Image 1 (tube, rainbow, N blue to C red):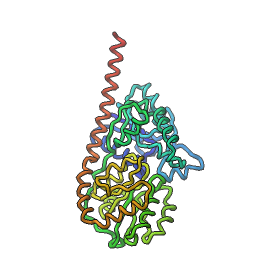
Image 2 (cartoon, helix red, strand yellow):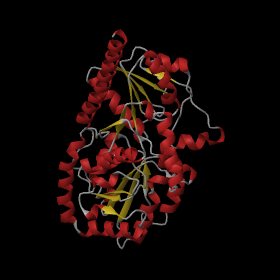
Image 3 (tube, helix red, strand yellow):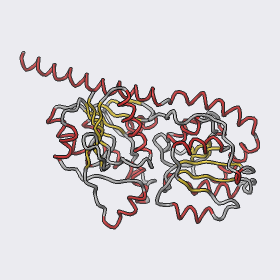
Image 4 (cartoon, helix red, strand yellow):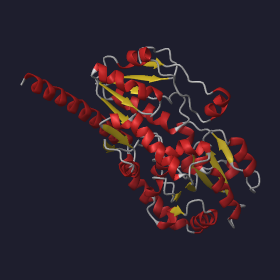
Length: 388
């Protein structure tokens, strides 16, 4: 197949969407498919990567850039260049490029699919309105009207978000397919760095932004009776780094803030003792899946807006959302039960096998093939009616 991926946020792998898009593209190419990418990413390979102009947010450009986001200006001639000749177009983001591509794809008679990677709460949190039911409901309807109701197929990374879309009236067919965990992440023996030899290391991988709730973990550790032993490691980047660093200095062992490449992150996961995912809003959380794939036992927020809680195998693997005292107790539990932690670690290694990236890519290919097949069947049906 010749496939065009439209993804406003693409380039440096410092956010979940870019990582997901990069792995999908690589997986498709390994299966013999030809892929073009329409985004703001600039490359010397002008045939594969079609570059759209970056949209300016004026005085907010610095804040947007810190979030690892670059949105595009939708120009019809650029979109047309990217999609002409494609057997299928997959739209990954509900922004200008995807929205403006729909009428062009209809004109060129090219089938397309969409993906739901952006929760309304991911948007409203930047306006401090993430808890507003009215605002988030409006955003669900806005995204549906602008993009998703025009697509017969929506890729949903989890059943949780598929259910949310159904609840908010989305009529399109929903394919529940995990974004998948790369084979770069696997259990291995890694010795802790010298400075952490006597520490209980807790990892959280996530963009330094409000909805990820790094602050909850810092506050919870401050309440732990073992706080002198705990070393927090925050893998990622983002606009709140300085604020979180300042908050973390109050702990006996200030947190480590660092962006790791895949090899470094795999080693870090494997020498850590616990993974905590405190985010309020999450469609899937590949970072958590990467951790449990390596056997790192998680403690996950049971937030109503997070799908990640469904990865919990035992009650001790979740904590009450936004409750730092409960989180502190769960951390203490795993420190005090090392043998149980080792047993649960093995359970997670087996559990995580279902999220293998290769099988997830195969399911995405099946969705693309279904969309093309249905498109052709409708075309033949219309022709037969016309000629009747």
